[in-house]
Image (cartoon, rainbow, N blue to C red; front, top):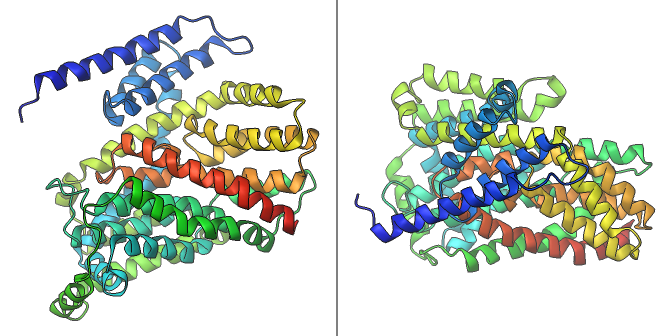
Length: 471
């Protein structure tokens, strides 16, 4: 493949600008109130993200360079820098990738995809809506949005492939990219809608209780219902406008799907095995909290069964370079984000935001804190980590400024979910979609940024009015 010389030069200039940007920040005096170590870690982290946003290098390259710099400059110890690789939920993402491959290879993905296309397949937008609706329907039973994306992703992947949109032949934009982006955006809504749809939600409700704010399953669902419903209709349409699929109308698709299903005939042995394994994993994932089971171990067990029955083989593993690449970049960024928090950088930013809003009227303080909370997610790789670090700080400042406590508590908890698509690493669920090859990291910053802005706007207007009305 020959590269255009001017494009290569342009790429080198962009890479040079990243280096310059990093060096300028590195040699700046450390801001007061921060340790030099925390500042240096922030500089490496932000330079790595900047490189991806301006398209100077892929997220994989940018993170491995960042990892090398972090260790070689002594900013983090080797143990700290590599700690992300031992996180169980990151392994869960990788196993979800491999199981997705089994769902497709067994033919089950194809069958589910054709069933969905037969019912809703007359347009790309309708398919987008049906994926988000399915997600909202199953989400109350899933305390982990990572595990949930492990269920949704293979179906979306099969939908894309069976609509003739593949990464391998360059037709990802035909419909696949749109469906992946829509499903990823849908997760921000389904996780906001139910108290049990995301691991951080119950922890947040518990933190609110410590300040005397009672949040039950029902009151959470009621408070989230109206803004989430508005966004359910809005978000897929916005993505359809700003990130359109090449294939918009598919009036013949339901008929084609019907014929394809007839041609497939009855469910095959491999589909039964895959289906039973998949349902077993879903049940165990749903019950994992009450039965004290590890979600990642459940996924490994499922993968083991697929390997025993030859639905997933070592040859398939060789074809999964994406999964391995994803493991590497996400583990690196996760560790850096974790230590930014532990070294006090996040708290420092939170304090600065709090000080900046002191003395304003409560609606101004309220809006500024929520917008600040959403934007600060650029630096966090884990929604749970952000909530644990900042929820109490922001809530305390808001209550002091006269913001109604219930309103602020709900809104911070909702924002922890609806800001998740702001970056490719903003949620472990995003990582599965970005790793598919259908979506590029740079596209997530752009489209995800717009979706986050839409989510924030609806929650700050309709959401605020609705919560004020019911609490």
